[in-house]
Length: 176
Image (tube, rainbow, N blue to C red):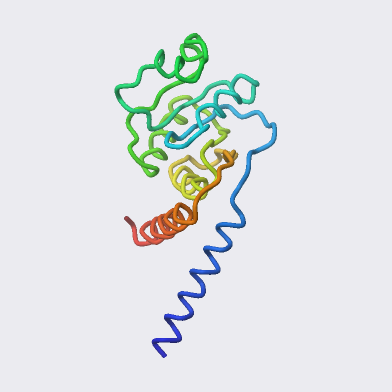
């Protein structure tokens, strides 16, 4: 009986992993939101967020999880954009250190600015967990639009991210 239960758990885990991999999200289509939130840590995330801001898809952008030593002028120079864009429309969130604290930092920023619609930009394989963390923190009635940056993740990267996602969901169920 124990073997059957363990086999069932393993089968469900494997099917869940397959579903996770084949349903990785893609970029969102054009849709204006109040704000854009970009989570640092992956290639082309900040560039995608700034591109959307410049295209008029939102009025303001938060880059969450920026190293405390980074200044707007340095980031503007690194991505080849004018510093004036950072002065008017881009905020650097420098308190978050992981996906969970990205959610808290971003939700606090949303409340402070009274935004009700947001586009979340992160890498495709990171989107399920990032979305989960942000949705847990956002106020009721806030609309979230996932906008994933396409990538070419390795099997190990997908394996680790899927397990992080599962562990986070389980830990939230038990109140951690």
